[in-house]
Each structure stands twice: as structure tokens, then as C-alpha cells.
Length: 464
Ligand SMILES: *Cc1c(COP(=O)(O)O)cnc(C)c1O
Image 1 (cartoon, helix red, strand yellow):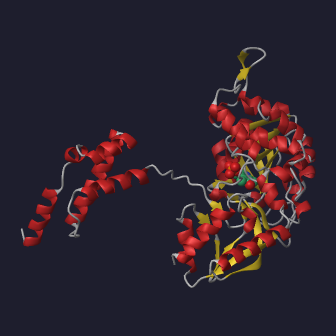
Image 2 (cartoon, protein in one colour):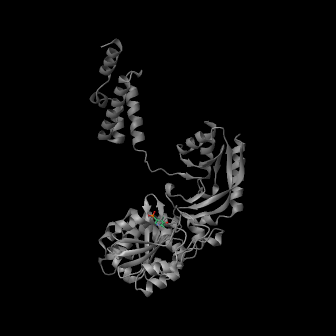
Image 3 (tube, protein in one colour):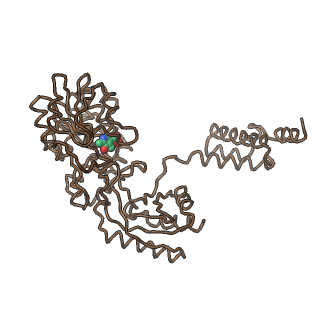
């Protein structure tokens, strides 16, 4: 053993054992805060780190108080939730990576109430007997969409899988080649189809599929025609697809259902807000789709859910399938969903559902906010300006259709480092970077987050 090896061995021997550290006053204080078991884990982790540092030849401070300080830091860091609240300054309204739709005050309150106590989740109060979870939100969904029956499950991927499994297992499902889409996060229509046990029958071409292509594919093995809204991309140019109404007529002539994965859950017309027209759920039902599947947390603006609306005879088969139990919606979801749907029934959704508030927010209001922020930053000695830009609806909805906005723009020679400091700050801020500019879109910054955002910007910029 050479001299440095001997030094290392000596340093290792000087490290106290867990028991000795546990006997200190500092340990007693930490155990009171975090419990004995987690404290032991912290001390083991800190000692292991210290041993590794010594063996790697790093100069380490003498053991003692600093070990307890390191343990305290480990404990504090360990219990920080990994799911953190974030300020979304990207201008992408339904941002899947940032949790999609923020909920209305009423939806938040309903979730809080359902969380805090017992509820009539599966209990028929007048009868004093077991009730059904599937009644919740169903009536509201039927009234809003014009469907006979409805069911809420965990998310739309589950809704589509359940629909295909319950209705088409072992049968053929006809779909246009232009709709064999990947939604993101691993949701690919052909894979979901395979998982359901239905056999995919592709018709048409990527850009053009005709009604006769569907008609020629129908036979005695056909279980359904499926239309998947290609929500996250656009096919432009020489394209054609039969309408839902034409497909419904064809399907019904042959006594097979038309299933429609609508995706976004739009109940209102986006075209009224200067966006492209996203197909709505009620329009799908009115066109004759027999079951429509969509998300609860995209343009519907509610909690994560998958919703199935359509004919009672088909929904009854879906509800009774064992998979329905495996993908059922939880009580918090049902509470938040019902409260969100109530906004639409009261015709107040554009004023109360945050996703629609953001879509409907007047350009002049956003411009004034961006200007005000720029002036506040200038007041703090930070060169900031405003520039025109675009906000996106996101969530795989309305590709290529944006809303005009005004961006707060901050030039920086090290803009990527600035964006990183903002993301790891408290609260984390996710902004856009374009060239040498950090861009902040007021559209998706919630009321009540403004001062936090400005403080975070000033802190991150002055730290650079
Ligand atoms: C978003 C989307 C899905 C997946 O929905 P999740 O709620 O993410 O499970 C499926 N189909 C379409 C058309 C979609 O837009």
C-alpha cells in the first residue's frame, strides 16, 4: 500500500458509524421531524457518499457536524414532491407535458370535497343500496352531446381500447390509411387495435380515402368502421375523406356501428375564437357516430378522463366488459368532471373553464399584460421588450392553427442557461427560447402567478 492508500484507509476509519451519529442531539431533532427509519436511510446515504469520495481521492472535510448537515439536506430534498407546480409561460394551452388542463375553481372545490370525505360514489342514497359509479357525469354528458348514454373511464387511450375490445374483439375494424395515427406518448391506433383483439382492415391511401373504399371492405366479419381524428397533424393538398355522416349512413346500411375517436373533447366551436374549426363531440353524435371517444383534459378542460358517449345498446356492452372495471374513473375525476360539465350546461364555460378563458382572452388584454411586465423588468434594470407571436392550443389539437399573442421578450447572450435557471427555480417557469431571446407568453400564465413569474424572471436574470 502506498502513502495515499494509507491516507484513504485512515480517513475511512475516521468516519463515524451510523449508531454514533444517531446518538447526537442533531439526530434526535431530525428523527423528530422525519422519523427514525428515514433518518437512518439518510445517514447511510451520506456515509456511503463520503466513503466513495474518500476512495476517489477527493479531499473531504473532517467528519462531524457536516455529516449531520448533509443528512438534513438529504432528508429535506428527499421529501420534495417530484410532481411540482409549474408556471407555464410557453403559450401552449393544453400542454400534455405540463399536465394539460388547469381546472376551474368549481372543479377544484368538487375534487377537494370528494377527497376529504365519503361520497355516494357507488351508493344509491334513496334506496339505501349499492349504486353504480357509472351514473356520475353520464346524464350531463348525454345532455351536452346529444348521446343516449355515456361512460367515463381513466383516459381516452383506455376509452378507445375498451370500446374496441368490448365491441369488436375477433372482428374486423375498417379504418382509413390516413388515420393510422400516433397521438404521442405511445398511443398508436394500429397498436391499440391489436391490443383490443380486433383485426385492422386498412382502406384507401394516406391522402385520399373514398366512401367506396370502405364499402368494398365491409363483409360479414366487419365489427365496426373506426374514424380516428388525426388531431395532431394536417394533411394538406390533394386529399379527401368521406364525411362522418356519409360513413354513418354506410355503416348503418350494413348494420355495423360507426366508432369515432374524436380526441380533443371540444364541446364548443373553436372557429368562433379565430381558430380553425375542430370537430366537436355533439357534431359527431349528430352526424350519426354510434360511439364517440374523447379526452376529459384537452379542450373539454376537465380532469384526466376518457369519455365514451353514444347508443345505449353499445354503451351497455362497454359498461359490462371486464376491462371497464380495470380502467374505471376514480371519485376525484368524476367530481371534477361533473363540475366542469356543469359550466357548459350553464353556458358559462368560456368565462369559467381555464382552457376556454385562455382561448377567449382578448389580444389587447394580453398585449397590455406583456407591456406591463416589460416595464416592470425595465424598472429592475433588465432590458425587456414585447413582440408579436403565436399561442398554440396544443394537446394534439388544431395543428397549424394558432392564436395571435404578444410575447414578453428578453435578450440574453446565454439564453439557454437562463431558461434552465428558470426551469429549476422556485416555482419552476417553463418559457420559450427563440434565437437569443427568452419568450414569455402571458396567455398561459394563470391569474395569481404574475408576481411569482416576475420575481422568478428577475432572480434568474440577475443570477446570470
Ligand atoms: C389525445 C388523443 C388520444 C389519447 O387520449 P389520452 O387522454 O391522452 O389518453 C386518443 N385519440 C385521439 C384522437 C387523441 O387526440
